[in-house]
Length: 462
Image (cartoon, rainbow, N blue to C red):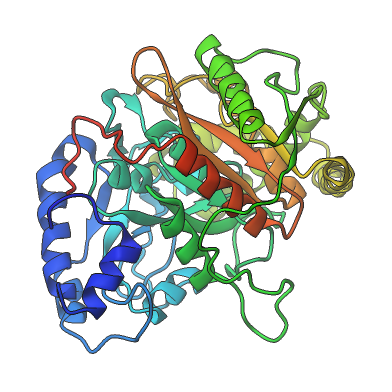
């Protein structure tokens, strides 16, 4: 197809019989083969099953027949779910996780899986099993993590939207790094099945080039069962006319300002919002000090502790099947007092209440996504000395995890670029259940400061 066509329009073209699902699958395969050797975004290919599925019949729906990529942290029947780890390199699964199943039920065609760091534990995608994923904007730089492969695939034009998940920023971080839109939904908006984390902080959704693709995937993935916690948003199709009270700041919880390019970008976003008629108020970061970091990483490290124990109980040496970062987190957790996890989970409840109170005063909370533009590959790799990597990670990923703990929806909107040509996302969050409010704002920002024509040199899409 000539020119960029997003997933919603691909679905329209299929229904009008102007293109077939098989033709789209073949185009997607050709794009993978053309660019993946440069970026290493697609970690596993499922071409023959995709071709067979594309020949139909397929379920009816707005995205029926549209090619899709799943993050290799999600189960998809008949493929390995490696979670980026040598421990699970041959983990062939016989089930499909809830959100990917929603995509299958909607008629989307799974073509393969995307690169992810080990167990999604880092904000960069450079694992020992799957290798480094390169940022399409500059191949020497990180695509972010843990949905780094998904973001790189979309940024390079392989597909217009791809599955992603977020336990501490893993949708928003790579969206920011790769110049995409990505929204972490409200806690429990989607049923996601069991996770290894001790707290309910994971959301499964997507990264995309257009807001409407993300809004459509969001609508298709929502929990619509009788016991659903939230009334479904449905497909949010355009901007809202509501003028919002937006709180914004640039400092991290420890009082540090981000990289000058990030600070300038967020200030420009705040001005854009004000120019659009929103009430933008500069505030102090409602989180201060190191307590949040300590408590979050206690919970974050509890899962690696369980994984190391599992490897040992299977008679394996952890260092043979797990990365130094994973083992370091396990050691960190195992050196804590026995009641550390319980105290951290209680602290999480406190954070949720505090964020809810803050967002009773403001409609939206604007911050950076990350403290700096995408780093060079190697700077945050899992093989870096643990103490060094710990500090680098804490400094870099300073704004996203609060919303996982609070259960609030939060999105990265690709409004900025660094002086050396790397994307910078702006993070907007809202109160629990206000996902549609964020989509409405995102559409408005997309129209006011379009990003669709910004493409990296590696782009292979239409």
